[in-house]
Image 1 (cartoon, rainbow, N blue to C red):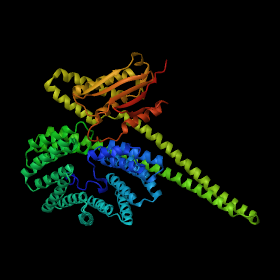
Image 2 (cartoon, rainbow, N blue to C red):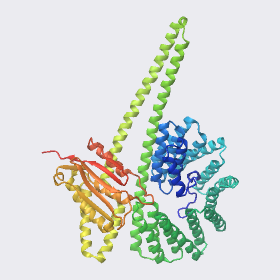
Image 3 (cartoon, helix red, strand yellow):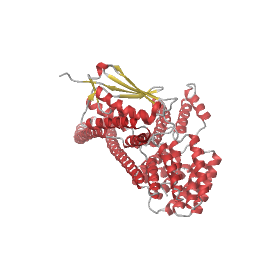
Image 4 (cartoon, rainbow, N blue to C red):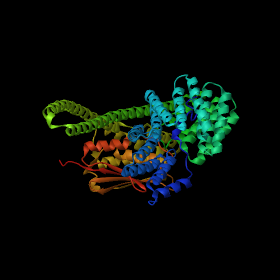
Length: 635
């Protein structure tokens, strides 16, 4: 049941700050903008805003954290700069950009160690342990957690100690059949939270106890702790906590065969998440409901619930939720003996799992590169310390030297200088070797990314297209024929251009017209594509193939759209050498699973093709990408 029981541990408790009401956030923003306030007061305000946004709007939180970090760096306040970097790490963690999260945490740790702030350092180590856990790096995760606990004990921080105990419990829970250790550390955390009156911590621990007893098949104890967690969340007015507790209770009730009560809880969960606009959580609720219907052998109802989950997730990229929905539909159709449908959803399930595995591999490669860069930076800092120490020792010798020992001191200094020269030569050679290796790795990585960008075909897009086609065949045969024609043209282009570094602008735009036809069938008037490009550039300029398709796909993926507020993607030229792709910022209310590798691959690809860079960024109300056009050589 681990994969279906929500918030078994829910992450480390120091990741759960007291969220401010909107009125409080507005007040903090006014303080931050008031230049008459003391600088530390303003920093506390922007820090509080960042924490308030981390979990439901990580992009806004990241912007606040960067404001805090830049301001603190200007003032030379390393402790505050480290706090801003910690929030940046949290934002990247919730955006699933683990490489950037590690980078932010490591820089925060370096600054905190310089100023000796062990209290806050313990929290950052805990956050880093959380990311290691998500990366399945158990050794590094437990090392970071125990480091956090040690620092918290030294500082006498009871709250952080309790958080660390919960983190250790998570580690043991994820080990096979290690429930005794899990319960032991949860008891330690419970004692401290009870002493401090820490309500959020108590609610979380109660949920964790419920999860463990569920796995131990002690359903009575599991239900008891779920009720305690629900009571705490209701008292705090925490809707997310209430919904999660209701979901947990529904799971236990389903196992005990109390299906009517379970379905009542599931419906309440759906209502809460619909009210909050959390589409992904709503999809999870329908998935859980579908599993419960399968247990009751109500396969048609299970199909309806799981299909709702899958429909809600269609606008998002591949995820474990997507895989769960496909698996639920597979089980329902298989139990119903509709093997054709079952096979179709099994294939979707396998495709999503393969895509997730590919993303995990790419993330591990980025982590390896991050470790290499950290080693190079560490070597540079050690060399700097060595040079500073050498200079200091030389000054001391000069001050202590006297005329009577001039010759002896000179001989000693010469011997020391030779020794240092030998060591410096060694370090220089070693540094050069590392740099050469770094250049080779970076070049190889860019080449691999270019190959990846050329050959990637989005399975999610293909399945959506086939799903649309299956519905058109029965409703509008003529339109279905057009759809098939445009779909074949799109994929023929992808296959034909896979070995090309550049294509004419005319060729790329012909492909985009076919691609936009497919999108038009899917989204209707919710998506509008405008192209304003002078005719003389179409056959005189080149572009990397699939560049425009990827940018349009990113716009659709990250922005909401409706008939009243359509998403407009405008493609035009700023000059004869720059192509602009622009869309209004209509960001989704919930974060979309994204690694960010697509845009970075385009940037890296053009770095090998042109001296002019690809520029991307946000304005107040738009996201704009500037792509250099490359002239076609004259024959």
